[in-house]
Image (cartoon, rainbow, N blue to C red; front, top):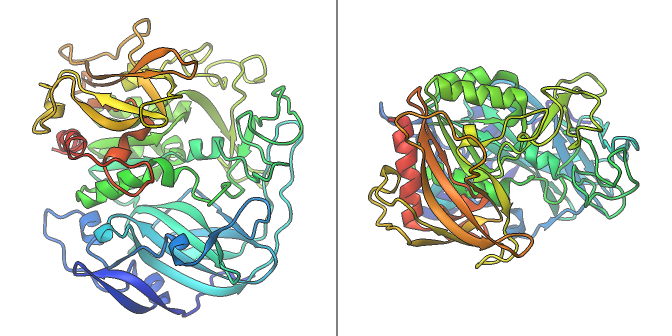
Length: 514
């Protein structure tokens, strides 16, 4: 199989140059050689311009949305083309390996895009390689006891990431000759510098919900909708899941559901941001101490003790925290090495203290339950509420403003009782009075919204958002909703962009980075 290969491949692409759409023929391998999307050099940055702002001046393309260009999403039954990466993130200048299966065997190509704003097209072509001769990789073995599915595929391609690539979320689009396609998602880090904002991609939650292969026969996740025989959990769900397998469906995990709108808006707004994943926080959480802010976005439910300790330490050292999601810090997890000894490739979560052989501070139960005993509210400012089953807009309810005189709402034109349409859900947080509040400066903890809805059982309930200032001076904002990003941009099908919510988000981030 090809390793470290590079092939020249020209293609017609829809790009944005100088604000105008154009049809461009690109020799795509030059992107991988020279450092990033679109193939043209970028204008020099001014002293106060972030690297991300400069990056987004490059030509953009929407061809990463392959379904718009005659390609069909590969499925988990036929597995026409599937792939995964050797790591969830890689430092620029490093290497990351792709493992790809094609059925039936046929040529395939790999196009790597960086996700951002890029004039609204959402991506820039960073590298293009192939065609390669595809093979059908073996069925991934199942551990009947734990439900662990970990693939042992042969490597297909090693991507040498140029040092010039900008930190970001990258999507490798793998296309086969029969016009099926899927994603391999990964982050490129920049470990040499501390950005103003650290963005944590929620890959542990992606993996928890990953039921690959979702073929109605074998696939396992940490949930009861898994397939096949029961495990030691007492039902079909797994208690261990591996990153050595594709994500079910389109291969992007939950990125295109809960995070892409936030990333597009964040980059459109020009903030200096560096991208990481949950596993980076687990391994080297101290790296965020040089930043002004840390962001957890969308659905960030599964946290290790090392992650929680690192984020608490960052707050207590003055790093601002933005929880622009919901249901965060809910389940405690541990990591284990793969069968070949690669660290942190297996995620362990028994969800039942009686089943977990490890008893004590790292027993894999809900964070608020013993023996973990660390509910999220003292850190986040809120705790998990419920699933919105019959919200006003599908599984989403309206965000109803409270304490509109707070600086968070400055210039937004929002008043107490005003509603922002359809961004609360599908899971939402709330203030739980029996649980301790955060330690705070000057009684700063403030509820910013109280949004009514009916919970999963059909009973009346409500969601909250909140903000507080820690004794260190760090501000902590909690949106209380997985769907917050739906109010920032218009990419997702459920998106309901709202200028008032955009202003609120800008107020929070501007306070964080000033």
